[in-house]
Length: 522
Image (cartoon, rainbow, N blue to C red):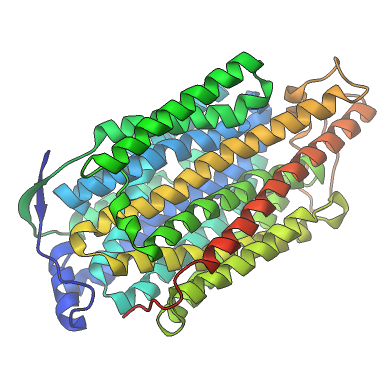
């Protein structure tokens, strides 16, 4: 049990002016809302720019540190701890207030970012990314929750669109900055770049964000968090390494995951205040919003993680071009989010989310049809479609859930939705990494190069040295025919990855069709 500070909150259907005043008193003075929102937007940029700037730089990081087999774990480690600690930070925020959780999370994120830049091996980088994910959990949850606290239901769509636009702008800059960094300075600066912004955010939020709350107590489900960490870690390891394990090891892994998942499910169903608030899932809108967020997370991580290696390693373009190709996803996301904010009330959350489902189908289909000769513009168009899907689906999910619950459960409900998206990211990263490694292993075994090269050899063709807009050949000591063969294998392996992304897009489209059509936001 944790001693807490909260206030009695107005319900979502109260008079707009009264609700606005109450929220302003609780999460900062009403006349300070624009200033607080500005610093929240800076804080949001920390996490958003980190994802895309690292994705663009990863081929260069792998080329420097080695460990191509661990490629997906740089993302998985970050996403796993972010997923596990998201509901914990939500519960803490409902207990002790949003501000202390947010400031502590920013500090932890910045320290881990500095450590990532000093990593001397892929294993060290993954370890620091675990810690960085804990900070990101609090940052993302608190920013979205505070936006719900500060603004009324009719304002939330517009404010969430502002936050999505920040995500979009910083994510547009992320791939470009990442490409420029790896082309001109050490890759460590992709982690150090956001530190000054974090310092500014800490100063501004400390000065302008205030909370006035009364004391109560709440339960933090640490046991559930441990079970969730163990269960999801086991599942991710099984998905990522399963194809390379001996049959006995594989079945032992399956048994471990089944037992861990069973214990976790039992706890979620029987323990009051469990880490994932399944009682909220009795509402059909919340149920399908959370399921959609999970599958959207799989689609999203597939594009962010594997579009840059395709542009660089298969097409042979420089990191900056790969950054441009991924940037369009960051353009489509805020545009769709802004549109969704305006459509949620007149169309309803179900119809708005369905627009995202259709966009996912189009974007996933374009990735399925991707071929090296189509060039980075095809990747850009495909990424734009996925970005539009994320904007519609995620904005519809967050605003709908925040408008369905009261203040006392808003942080927990918001964290639950973000947890599902992050679990989708985590499971998707592990699954797609396993698909790629298994595909490459199979293709190498069937080739004339069997015994001469391994999956790790792929990292030697990942980083062209030029920064031109035309495709160039990587400078390696490998014979030309070996480089060409490895490039073909990488293209085939990534096509298998994009096939899974397309399947996930089809599932996402189907889930949006199941949202209750009759629900409206008031």
